[in-house]
Structures are given as structure tokens and as C-alpha cells.
Length: 624
Image (cartoon, rainbow, N blue to C red):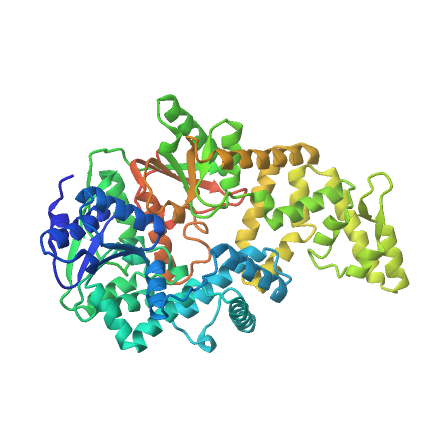
């Protein structure tokens, strides 16, 4: 592949700082590997003095393999590394080979999930809360913020401080550290031990950093220390694709780099070799509304001129039917299923599409964790209510929802109502036994509460599944419980309601609880089978905007492009809204030939407004 003028300018750069602004599909990997080769062949730089650093082992491996392929394997000694690996080796070398045990992501999540269950026992989804806690602990350490000065968003200050202290106590007792600790130790070593810093400065005299827009403050500070005073630091990134603020990544760091290096040269890789001109131009209209960015004029090398298609639908069901029809038509025309990707801002709604794909025998592959609406605690609550309405007063179901909403039923009260059903041998609840218990306690208001629950369950039994679920939520007060829970636990009420809405919409197709449970069982079995087949099956790709980064597809369909989803309802500040716009831009620029944006007027029976990002794209609906 011959290089274009901007690529050649980047590759030819020798000494001093350079910032390469690399738009989507602009060949940044080629530039990095070719520039590394240029340093060795043309400028006689010792390969052992070159460091190429990126974020994932896979990216580092691919970069190394590309370099080896380009050079015929006759250049040895260049270091292709992740930040994690680099910092580990600096510390290990300083402590003369002492082994540092880093906790795995899985073990870290398990540890914090267990802490959530202890510190916040009322939280319904401990694993989800654990993710938020881990993220915020990382921000405190990576930004080097004093704990007393940090205001958490996942819980109150007192509880967060308890998480922080308990988490680090558990790590110390196990003789472990996390990656954020590794970074902090590395920074402190290089900042305070001049001889250690000089050793690494002498080793790595030329530094190339890939995906620079994803760097956080402490990583940047470490790399600056090593690069000085030569400052032969070559950064490649796109501030418009910075979408990991929750990890501490900020596009402002790219601007900071430019400000801190007065002699910094800048090259814009302005040719997109992936997407057609219509996709490139439309995506630039959207991202152009961000203020905190480098302005870029990008061109398309791809001659495909299919216009970006905006499709509007009355509801999600009709939206997904259209997606299914398009996928079938493309496959009938000889396309592989994997040439189409369906992109979601969040996992909400993926389960419903998976169900439709399965019913139409269309294979699919989910990038990332397989979403399962039926495992969500809100759906499990509603299923418990439905079973109770059918007369299945299983103890676990009753205890699960007895105070959702608050009915002041105590564990002792539930225990008093427990008995063993002689026919089924299951532990069940007798409302009469419970009422007898509360009469003995002279708590007549509790008898009224139990009578109201009986009335509610009897009403649900006479309803269709959909009507029954909606009565539980509205007449039975479940949605009020969700609102109270969301406020107390610092989670988005709307997100919980969306889960309930999606489940209610799913239940519309079934005439009985037995049919619904059989469908859920079939869904789960199918999901397990798809997971086993995913490595060898040609399937439609389903993924979130985040997990689509770095990928490309012939056709991309962005679904549910509505306010409250994209931008996400949690995005309130200017910085958060700009990050949401960057995510939408990343999703748009995954498409090579065809980009379709779907907008439902209703999202599971709730009226919605078109996403502002779609309006910024200045598109005209093609089906209205």
C-alpha cells in the first residue's frame, strides 16, 4: 500500500514531539509501523531504543506482527508493549525481579461485589454497583485526587470512603495490587528515584503511543517523565473517538500535549479509507457540534455514494421487523450475515432483537457479555409477582417482593406464614398464617396491607400478562418502589423503567404464564448455544457503541436513536454530552458502505423524541 502525503509526512518525522490526528479508517497502524521502520532504516536508531505502546495485548501483538511483516523479520529489539506491561517491568526491575501479584479483573469484580453486598445490602444488582465503585476508585487514584476531596456519584461520600478503605485492606491482606496501584507505584518510582528514571530514559529515546485519546492523566505523566528531555514522543489518536471518560481518559489531554510542547508538529491523516463519502460527511456534521475538539476536514477514499438512511417507525417492534427484513434480503443477495452490525448505545433492547433473530433463524454474535433481560432483578421481581398471582406462593418469590413497594412485612412475619406444601414439597407462604401472626402482635394495619396484596394478586390473575404487569407496576406501586430505590442508590430510574417496559412488551405475545416461562427457557437455551457457536458461526454482529470501537462492517444499523438513550439520560454536563456525541460518531464511522439510523416514535410504549444527534446529521426520513 502506497502512503498518501499526510502519512508520508508523519512517517518521515525524526526528532522532537509530533501529534498525529488520525481520523477513522485513516491508516494509523500503518503510519506507526512504517515510522518505526523509518527510524531504524533511515535514521539508524537502535531498535532497542524504540518503544511502541498501546492499550491492549491484542493491539500490541498485532502491531508487532505488522511491523515484522513489513520489515521481513530482519529488525529485532523494538518494544511493542501495553501500558500495563511497561509499568510492570519498570517496577519489577526496580525491585530486582520481585514478583508483583496483580488482581485479575474477574477477581477484582468479585471482591467489590462482595463488599457491595456487605456495605449496601439493599442494592439489587451488586455486580452493576461493583462496576461503578471500581471505576470511581480508579478515577481517584489515576487523577491523584485526595479521597477527602472526591465527590462520588455511585453512592454517598461515607459509603464510598468505606468501599475505598475496605477494598485496599482486602488487597493488602491478600498480597495483591490492582492496575491503578501499579501505575501509582511506577509514577512515584520515576518521580523520586533519579537513577531509575535515567535508566528508562536512556533505554527508550523514541516513544510512539497509539490511541492517545484513551490515555489518562497518570499514564500521560509517566510517559512524559520517560520522554524528557529529548521529547522524541510521537502520539497518534483522534480526540473525536475518546469515549472512555469513565476510565479517566479525556480528549483534553491531547490539547494539553500540544500546549506543553511548543515545538510540537502536527499532521492530520485526512483520508478515510473505510467509509463512503456520504458517511464521512454526515458523521462530520454531527461531531462538528462538539466544541472541545481539534477541527478536522476529512476526505473519503471509498467511492461508495449510498446516502445515510434515516428510518422512522411507530414503535420498536416495527423497527426490529425492518431490521430483520433488511438482514434477510442482504443474505438472499449473497452477503454473509457478519457483514452487518446492529449497534446499540446500551444493552437495553438487545434482548428483544435477539428474540426476533432467533424466531427468524438468523444467526447472531454478541460482542461482549451476552445480555439477558430475564436475569435482570426487575424482571425477576415481576416474574415473582406473576407466579404469586397464579397461586404459586413460593417462599423465595414472596420474600423477594414482599416490600416492593414497602408493606412493612418483617422476616419474622414471613417466617410465621411459611409451611411445606404436602403435594409439591415446596416451602410456601400462607397469607392466613401471616395474618394470624400479626393479629397476635396487635398490628392490624399489617392485616390491611396483606389484604391489599391479596386483592392486587387476584386482580393480576384475571388480567392478560401485559395488563397484569402494568397493574403490578402502577396499581400495585412497583414503579414507585423503583423511583425510591433509584434515588437512594444513585441509579437512573428511567433505566429501570426501560427494563420493565421491555419485559412488558415481550409478554404481550403470550397468553399464559406457562407460555411465557417456556419462551424464557427457550431463549436462555438458545443463548447458551449461540455462545458456544459464536467462534465458528457467520452471524449478524450485535454490540454497543463502546464495543464497536476499532471494528468495521459493510453495513451498520444504529437502532433506537432517541433522546434518553443517545445521548444517555445520565449525561447532563457539557463534557458528558460531548462524550455521548463522540460515541455516536464512533458508531457512525464503523460503516464502510451503508449506514442506517433507526428512530422509533415509541420505545416500549413510551413516546420518545428523535436524538439530537440525528437532527444534527440533517437527514430526511426515507420511509415517511
